[in-house]
Amino acid sequence: MAHLNPAIFLASASALSNRLVDALLDNTFSGLYKLQPFDWAIMVPYFLVLIVLSVYGLHRFAMILGYWKHRGEMLDEAPQKFAELPRITVQLPIYNEQYVVERLLEETVKMRYPRELLQIQVLDDSTDSTHPFAERLCAEYAEAGYPVEYIHRQNRHGFKAGALEHGLETATGELVAIFDADFLPPVDFLERTVHFFAEEKVGMVQTRWGYLNRHYNVLTEVQAMLLDGHFVLEHVARAGAKKFFNFNGTAGMLRKSMIRDAGGWQHDTITEDSDLSYRAQLKGWRFVYVPSIECLSELPVDTYGFQVQQSRWAKGLTQVAKKLLMKILRSDQPLKVKMEAFFHLTPNISYPLMIIVSVLMLPVMIVRFYMGWFEMLLIDTPLIAASFWSISAFYVIAHRALFPKTWKRAFLFLPALMAAGVALTIINSRAVIEALIGYQTAFLRTPKYAIGGQKKTMEARTATYRRRSSWLPYAELAVGTCFLAMVVFALESFNYLAVPFLTLFVGGYYWAGVSTLWEEYKGKLAFERQRDMAAADQAEA
Image (cartoon, rainbow, N blue to C red; front, side, top):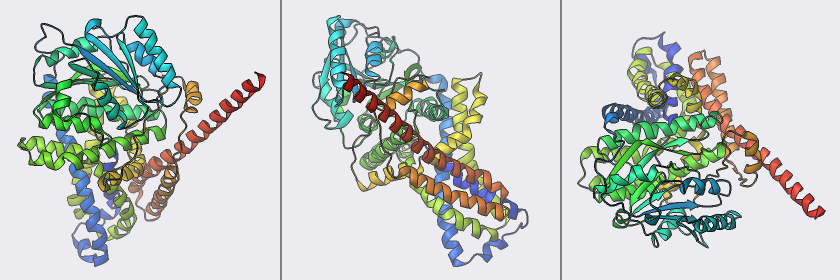
């Protein structure tokens, strides 16, 4: 999955406001000469990190320009069609998805395509009651004449990649469509995507994600905006410019021979989709993006579920960079393809860099009193333009493309979007460091509940898949408190314009920590109620 990191603007924005009051009092370079060696030791790494973060911010401007240039080139229909339709295998990988598997199968069998040319594989690695439930559902559909097959593994070797590879061994289709458990494929999905493969070098067709529960709460609104930036702007910019872009693991179709030619599904990274995408495109396969086809899905509704999903993507993409980036840079691909691959695979390094910025921010606030307004204009203004303006423009433009009549409401969610980026800093920094040092972890699924807009259902269903966040929310509260102290310092030193930016840090960390602990507490109560009710029913029986 692509990077989702709105936090990179915050430090540079804070740097501007931190010195704005004093800048009005001093308009020369004299402040620079007053700095002591220790001051330089603080300021130099601080601004070097900000420059790196700002480069990634500038890349967002490049994505915006690429979107504007190529948005009219995305095809709604394939330029040529098959004279004779090929066989298709639809793979549905699931793991402990008891609340969404029934909906998934119901929507999948509705897709229009000749039954004699269709195979539907339910690839179930479940270890809970989903296993017998899904097996029974598949048997019922098969008995009704649908080409549904149930495949259950006794282990999770290779996780999702392992399940897909295992299913591929018995797949009869020349093409393979993949849908995660929380997706609802549209009825015309196969009809509209299949003909793109009439061109022999097309290896993958990716469609756009939509969201069933976009308006469930502020968190889902923010997630939808983040993902819209990826699917509306980034995919269009990359695909239109004929640069590498990735299969997103679901809501897409792949050519089976391409999978084999690229080396198959490999599980040495936890983003097997991006890994396969780059290996296949290095082999010369062409990828197609069709944003006019929307596949609805369900967003995580709880903070920790959102953080786990994002950290998995951050770690996986960093693993792919470590695995393939040097191979890409040494290939005979055009320079523009190599540069875009670099920016696509490495942006999550900004999370540990944000930790460094956070550590340095307070001493920088103290040292900055020596500097004047002219230095601020030369250094801070470009940084804030590269970071803050690019983030704001990126997501507002994506929102406007999808909702031209109500796009201005995107501005209301920008503070929450920035705070959500801050909330990812600690967990994603850990994920990136784990990837860099080669520390392997299990594939952590994101539970889905098929709740739509019914919040009462959420409480009961989350009790089934309770997870403990361990030390994370306490670390977030501690860091949030440190930033609260910086707010106090800013007020005491009359740096009032720094307060809004520092407050975003406080809000982001406190939001993550408090909401996670509150959601876990509610989950605990719901679990205890279910346990007591089960015990009472057993006693009556």
